[in-house]
Image (tube, rainbow, N blue to C red):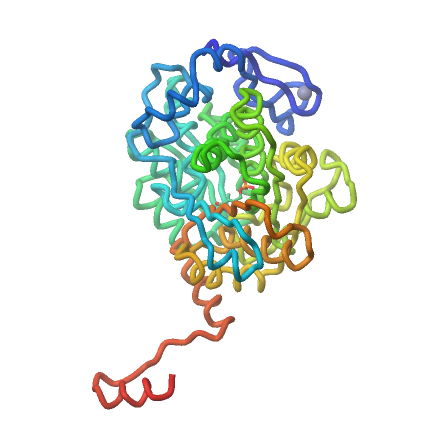
Length: 418
Ligand SMILES: *Cc1c(COP(=O)(O)O)cnc(C)c1O
Ligand SMILES: [Zn+2]
């Protein structure tokens, strides 16, 4: 792994060799998330846009020279990555915009963005010869780890709050994980999982703890820029819970910029649910995320319900360093965004997926974006993950099915009046 030159604490800046620490900076305990450092000169000499142009590998592994894994490490067989980036002119026109794309990560194998990170977790754990991998999750990271582990027969233990949507719990059980339903919040499940990993020596995939998760998530930025012919967009909208996705997107853009493959940095727009808006509050009030206490998180968008965003330092840097913004949207705006995005594009997102689109709507209404900007909205999770919320969303916008007896006369009655 000579292309990876070290790990750097995002709090104190201290650097470590890749074999020196597994997860966090020892000087900062569980908070000391580190960033993975690369030798871009070396990578740039060995790997080019031309190589990608000729690549027939349409997964995240097409970017292997930019990932923190050994070149010969086996990768899981599931197809992770290269999700479609749809041009959505109708949605754009409705919002008074010219250029809008939706990247649909609901299409990944376990139906959320988290597959990008869990794929890396499985490779790293196997490089270490780990017997068991563990994670805590609001649901999707768990489902992703569970599915990717199933694909390579890797034992794993999953901690989720018992309130996680049924579909996500079903995925875990179907894939054969050991599932611990924690009577508490995601934050409780996270703490318990950290303790368990230390107690039993399990490989720890946790978000905002394992430094390689942002590295998997950064592949979405690679894809966005490559799919746009290396002409980077002006803005990217993404929903934020723990802040690992937004931090990962930022890392991917920084990688491409360092290699000279893109010539500007898009502004990153982090969207949070009003009831779980730690980052938004910290950004607006200029608070220090190292000392800001946890909040009580409540939102319909379960995947972004986080009282203390675990990757908050990287998440703040992503917005600050790119000149983006944090936006907060209500649960009602999130639910409304589900059918609006689906009807305008054919992409059905779970609440946390549609949150990014709700943020774009708000940004347009508040005059934060101009009409000719090139904008990408990331749908991070499939709508079928949370059918109960989808049903609430259509009720909210007044859509109802017609219930009739099975006769043509009854149908005619209905058709006359719809
Ligand atoms: C995890 C998740 C997010 C938020 O990602 P963070 O890294 O926690 O900020 C957004 N949407 C979906 C569907 C998710 O599963
Ligand atoms: Zn440190």
